[in-house]
Length: 138
Image (cartoon, rainbow, N blue to C red; front, top):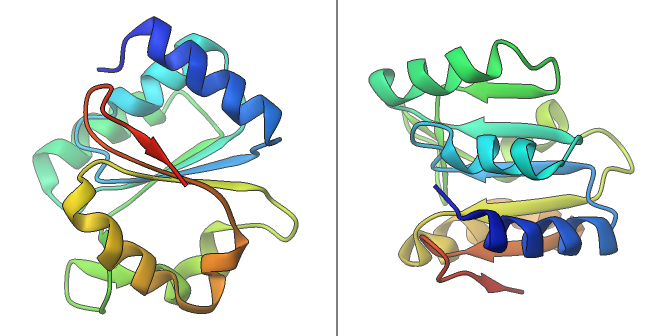
């Protein structure tokens, strides 16, 4: 889970950039989304989690939150059974005019997820990657 201090700084960034939507790639158990909610973020969250056990935990948390959607696949640079390109699902998860933060847990996956954003990569307001406070913003 991200610490309150780090979450507070992230919330300041989300407010400064008027972020309406957080795309959480690699949601695991939903710790990132829960941390955002505890810090006061009230915008939409879409969590991408392909694996059953972890996805079930995120869904239990998100079930109490009308603005938090959990989808059963990962984001990547190609479509597979458990993976989708962001440009292929963009219009399903992003409303027109929303300002988007893309959160990718593992820095090693960031390039693949951005490749999968295709024509929508310029529509990402902020991109964040890293684990447990080792985040980088672009």
